[in-house]
Length: 157
Image (cartoon, rainbow, N blue to C red; front, side, top):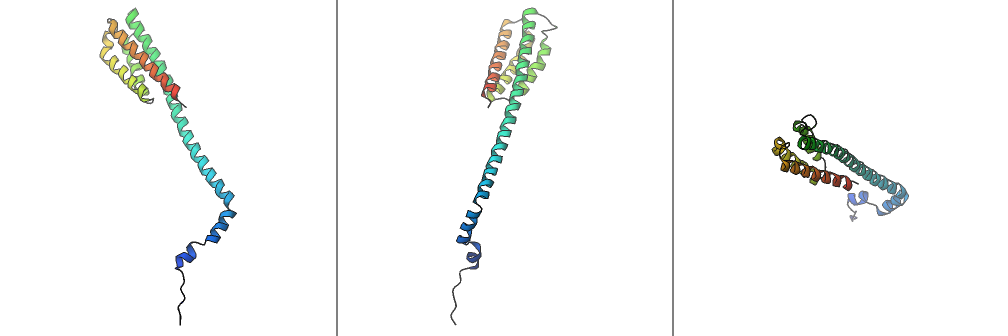
């Protein structure tokens, strides 16, 4: 009795090329639709994530710009007018802290500028009403921070 050679079971069941090509032709539109849907969903999710990041940065930047303006007003009243009501350096702390905290949400240049402003304010706020150099240093850092924040806004998609 002669034994006939049969291909292994997995080759008989696993892959039938003719059947595969027939199924591919029959379902080509569905496969293209599936790929298109997955790519579209992936892009949409990525774009939504980018929009959320940009929106957060934009909102933080506007608040930082507002606080920079308030801080500059405080510096001007404290130094040039010696007005303790409108130029109280203690009130400047709330602006400086808000600027430092929110600038962390922005680009690295703005974050660094916010930290530098905080450090300059921390070491010089007490002599703001008496020392011209202190006023120049803090005003210069406010301007640098403003430029860094505006650069962040300009770079958003």
